[in-house]
Image 1: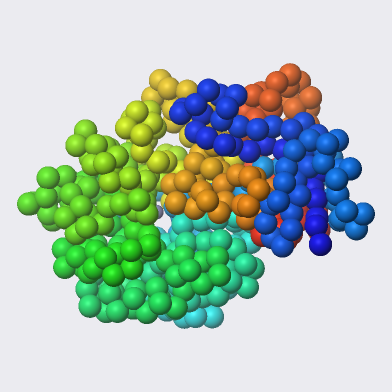
Image 2: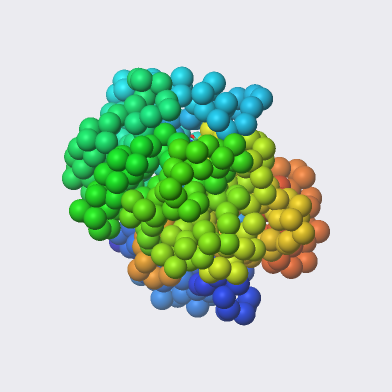
Length: 433
Ligand code: GUN
Ligand code: ZN
């Protein structure tokens, strides 16, 4: 049976930096989205499409709402849900003080499953339908996460952390055990339903060269899995990498020498890259997760989005929970805008919402499946409430253009703005129930 949703509809067809703005998006003020068996089969003007629908079509009317593709979070950590907002330090100290002690708990499957459920609840409340997610070093953490995602039929990418030095003993594996456990997880979960696997070395300071090489071996043996790691987030981290890998040209080279760059490789942060690193990321089709709330929270720096754009590198937005301070991609856009302001650059709400949807999906090489509302795509979408709060209602009523409305959503919007979240055509979050 068909179902249909009537609302204002917005989605992106291309990167606003690559085409004329009018060609980058479609907007239907009174739109209709038609769904069959979890997939989009049509979208357009309600007035034109409603008369074509069979009589038994279930039509949901969303008044005063904007329907958009579900948000894509290209970098986050589910085990850090419980330590979001931990006060007072920069990256390396923050990892030792807060992160590592928290992550030791995830060898316990029951505990891990409980946190995975809480994390997914938060994601869906924020309108995020797909994320690239760190587990911990424990294989149990990944089983628990994927089991929770499978039960909700979500499209997610995740992996077990690889970490064989410079971390507490309870949190380290070895090149061999990390390889074998990752391989078993790939065989169990990769491409099972809507799930995909990411080989996940934490970052070069906690991986020996031997471990990075085994990660490269996994990518060679499974050509369509992802690579997910951190890079060039913090200046002390970069100096440490230089000491640990004296023979490497730069930070990126520590990954490059192990064969870890490519179309499905995503590097979180990349705040302080050198010219050569930008060029090499571009050449290999590697992607970047821009994590503004985290980069500000840990005092890491201001990501130069303009550099990524001029180098034609795929970029998505990352919440980076728990260094990031919000699950909301709208709040992440708010801080992205301010980061750009401090760099003397501007972020239009069109580019911002492109990054939040199709841009994120493209960075994850999932743009054939999700990221916009084109027929054939999986029906993952959010219904945004234009009057989520008295202030938003009041401010929205002053808006004269779509540009203004979208900018208000990306400055004032958060989980309160997400009226509903739908995944594969099913309601997975309803704010008012
Ligand atoms: N670098 C290595 N591990 C982490 C982490 O857990 N969070 C952040 N923000 N950076 C990292
Ligand atoms: Zn991170």
